Length: 129
Image (cartoon, rainbow, N blue to C red):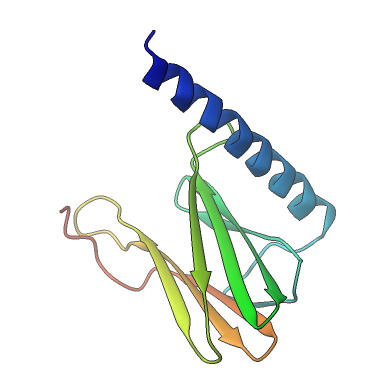
């Protein structure tokens, strides 16, 4: 095991802890996002995406509206973390493709004043690329 492998394993532990904590927070707040859900600052939402889930929350401090989304297939799988700074009215899209000719799992995060709108759905067909 090389130094790079050790460094990667060391970096995975905090992400797994974060994902676990975010999942617990999301479970404590009865708030599974539906087709269109509105989230307030520092509230977490869990969204089903394909075979996994995404945990979404945002902070709104010092004129910075930062949206954080963590996506994973399950608790043991590596997680991907996305951060977006959104201005009023801006959106960010996270899309997971599926099999060819099947709809992609789509998550649209839109800043609506001091709230975040979370829209889910399958809007586009996957090309298999």
